[in-house]
Every structure is written in C-alpha cells, then in structure tokens.
Image (cartoon, rainbow, N blue to C red; front, side):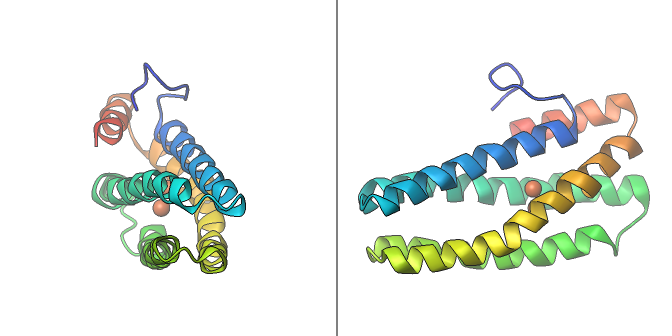
Length: 153
Ligand SMILES: [Fe+2]
Ligand SMILES: [Fe+2]
C-alpha cells in the first residue's frame, strides 16, 4: 500500500478515499461469496476487509485526527463524531465475524446492513469535510509527512 503500487493523489483525501474504495471492494467480494454459499472463502475475504478497516480506523484516530485537531484547533467537532461512529462500526464488525464463523448467512447480511448504515455516511463526511479540511490546513511539507505516515501505518 504505497504510492508506487496504488494510484491516488498524494494528499490525505487521495490516500484515505482510495483506502475507502479498496475496503468497499473487499466487503463486496465477501458479500458475493456469502450469497454464493461459499462461507469459508467469504470468511477469508471478510478477514482481509476487517483487518484493513481496523487499520484504517486506527490510523485515523492515532495519526489523522490529532493532526486535524492541531492544525484547525477544532478538538470538539468533527473528530468527536467520527470517533463515536468508529465505535459503532467496530461493533458491527464483531457481529459479522461471529455470523460467518457460525455459517449464518442471514446474520451476516443483517450485520452488514448495520455496518453500511453507519459506514456509508461516515465515509462521505470524511471525504467531503475532514480529509479536505486537513489537506487545506497543512503546509505542503506537513501534508507530505502525514500521507507518508498513513501509508506506512
Ligand atoms: Fe473513519
Ligand atoms: Fe475513513
């Protein structure tokens, strides 16, 4: 997951939006496998997705949000809401995992719907507000350093 193997603008918005799309595709593949009845392959694909989404959330909370808060002085605004939504997202991940491990396709679909109900709007808010706000608030060298930390994290 470096700039040499992926195609995105070298900005916070570019990298993290690309990662949203990458994770969306993994979830779609897992869902297709569930619907075809291949729950073993679905669990493997789901595991890649969950690992990637947990990493993405960790990088936002440990690297991006502190940078946004420091650059804008907004410590009680968008990042507070995003952190709360992350807790909801992580709960649905556990439900999806348990459903797949128990070969429960209907349970997986229900947990996936719960996930998407939070994640879709969450990602849109990040891509329209938080990521571009961070890009704008940083100098070019600061932005490059931040993108590098995200890529390596
Ligand atoms: Fe997020
Ligand atoms: Fe995100």
